[in-house]
Image 1 (cartoon, helix red, strand yellow):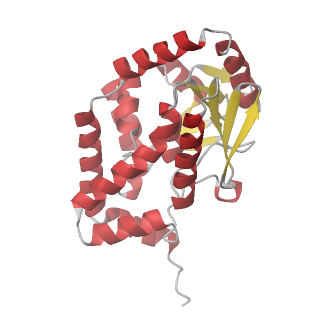
Image 2 (cartoon, one colour; image 1 turned 180 degrees about the horizontal axis):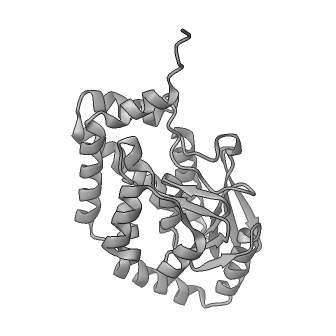
Image 3 (cartoon, helix red, strand yellow; image 1 turned 180 degrees about the vertical axis):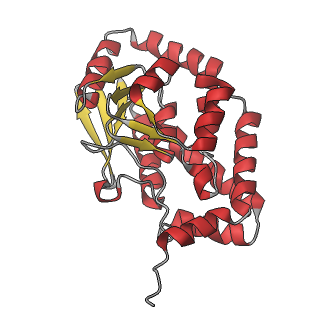
Length: 263
C-alpha cells in the first residue's frame, strides 16, 4: 500500500488514512491509484466498517492542481485539443477510483478534521456516514478555477441538500461550517475539535453490534434507493468535460503556478 494512503486495522474497523500532509492531502495521480488499490484490497475481505480520514488536523484540500500532477497534465493536454470525449472518459475514471471505497459491502464513515474542500468533500460524500469536527470547513471552489465538481459531487450533494443550496455552494464557492452542513443533512455528527476519528470509531463499534447480513442488505437497499441513475452521472461527466475544454481551467492552473518574471 502506498505510504500516501495507509490502512490500519482497529478492532473490526479498517481506517483508511490520507497521508500527504505537506500538500494538505491534496489528491494527485498516485493518491487516486492508492485509493483504488485500498478499495480493492478491502473488497477482498470486507471489514465490519471502513473509516476514511486524513491527518490529525485536516481531511483533504482537494485536487492537486500542480502541473506536475499527471492528472492535471492530462486534463490540460486534452483541454488544449478540445477533446471532450477523452475528458469525459478521464473524469469517469477518476470518479470510479473515488467511488470504490464507498462500494465495499460494509458501512463507510468519513472522519473529518479541518479542511474538506473540492475533491476532498466529494470523497467524503461517497461515504455512507460523515462525522466532522465543529471547526471543519467545507467548500466546492471548482467554478473559480474553470472546472466543476465532476467527481460525483454535483449529483450526491444535490440529492442531499437540493437544487437551491447546491447551486449556492457551487456557484459561490463559499466556505460552509460543520454545524450548517449538519443542519442541512450532509453530516451525521458534529463533534469537538480533534475528536472526529475517535467518535467515528465509536460509531463503527455501535454498527458492528448489528447483524452483519442485515447491515449489508440495508446498505444495498439504501445505496440503490438513493443512488442516482447512470444518466445523471453522465450529464455531470459530460458537462465537466465541456467546461474543462474551454481552457479556463488551464489558464487558472498557469496563473496559480507560473513564476512571476523579475523586472
